[in-house]
Length: 94
Image (tube, rainbow, N blue to C red; front, side, top):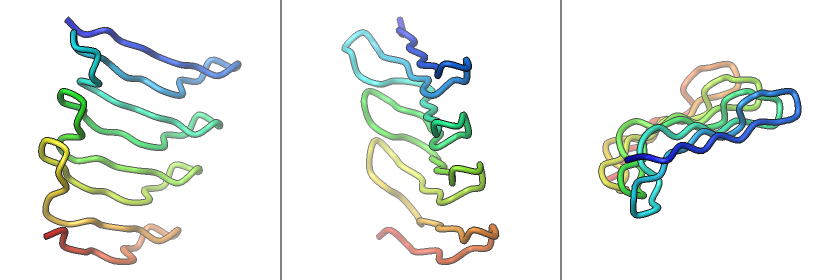
């Protein structure tokens, strides 16, 4: 059973959406937003650890960087984007 928690600002925009497993660990969809309602981070938590592809965003909604996790450990590469959306650098994690 998951317990869902959603936080909103005074205008009703969702700021944080997260779920917890029975042990109280973050588990499932995780979304965090900037104060203006634009998405800040999005990914999946599994038993308190980041899992799968995570994306982080600038305050205006453009992608800032992406990184893939497996059971809390970063995998493959880390891609960081410029303000104009072009790739600034793409670095292997290992």
